[in-house]
Length: 187
Ligand SMILES: [Zn+2]
Image (cartoon, rainbow, N blue to C red; front, side, top):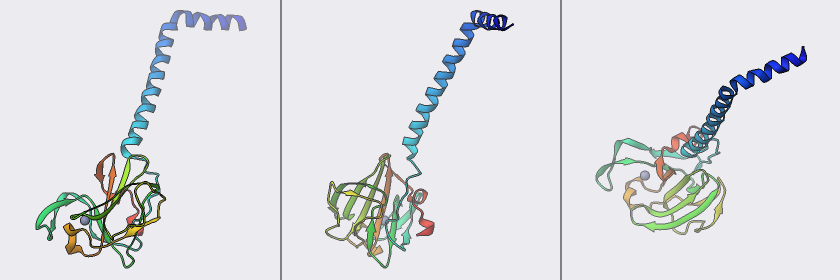
């Protein structure tokens, strides 16, 4: 009985080995494709499990992110997309939103003093209109919530907004809406 059952199994594989091996091959390909697609997807969308800190405490959004609706910039007298969020707060402290490395500290007349931090998973955060002499320099390692500078009015491109932080979040070199990553409802 046992032997004949074994024989039946052997017989089955003899007759259908090609179908079985094709089936196994398809299964392996499907698993590999699934894993590769999954990891690419994670890279493209970023790991949304990352814990973002807020760039300012008890901040008010004075100009929100908008990619499609143009907003007036009275300083430059033009209508433009605002791919950033402008924050003000009673306390001008500005904090890193994620762990990372300061990739640049710079100044230009439109954006004022700018700190850029490169994070894991393709994220870069950029803090414009900071006061002179930010608390960090290029190459510094920072952690989420660490103070990096103070909001100011050095961005002459938005001088009408007064002292504020112009915050931009990039994912894979493109600006993304910080509302989708930062917990701005509980700021
Ligand atoms: Zn702005």
